Image 1 (cartoon, rainbow, N blue to C red):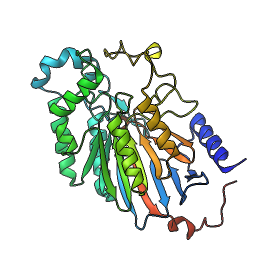
Image 2: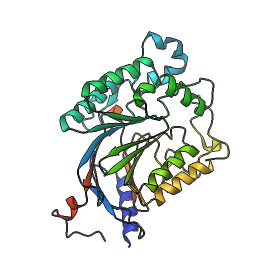
Image 3: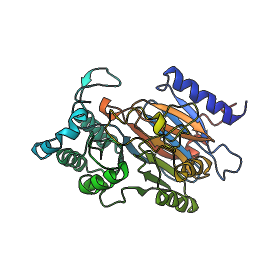
Image 4: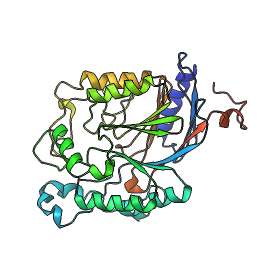
Length: 346
């Protein structure tokens, strides 16, 4: 069995057996044309990337799917559109202790953990809100400001969605990201953003409509030509063979005929003819890239690991249940000079 097949079968086994809290170790960029291979490891919520281009340690805390539902009198006229999601995550169960908790407590706990552990950034990767309330955005910004840690943000499908409101997903996203979510972006482009992390780049893409736009694909190609290692952060995972339609960005069966949630979520159905050429081109470009160290996502509310063409995609469990990812970027020498130097994958 070659290395790529081993990684693929190992991560599939872990995903299917519920063993994702056990350590996972793998190789990044295993294809022969890669200019410099790296590695990754996952222990519970601790994710480490190793790469020869990295000269020093960098770290950030990533969280997704908090589903904050705070609202006030300013939101009363929108209650016809926010009612279902306002009740969806009022009480949750902590992913480790199984004790009852709620999204605001989980969000505060994660930020306090980031301060305590000295993370240099917080990455918010979509569905921090259950709907775009002014009170929710203000409370979130207050909590973030209290940490003193810079944050980066990309939207999820619920952040900007008032269910049942007229308009296409693209138009509603544009309007509510501009009118309500703007403080979270801190002036960064809402569709795509580059955040340097030492010798690597974090690339944030908004794929919360399940689609990629031409300007986002152009941005990816532009950054790839720079030659720096990249980690992609997006709310909806990229399609991986064998995964469900929830892994819908690039899924070959994504189309209106297979959209089971449009009536529940009171939105327009998915595109009748399926994904655009641009979305599929983005999917191919990412998994063929020699520069992508990994892909981080949320949306599914369940942890998973997949490796495609040597590139790992890690999905975090929901922050509404207290989960987050502690992400470290480390020089490859941290592996090669360590106690596992002599170990080899089959």
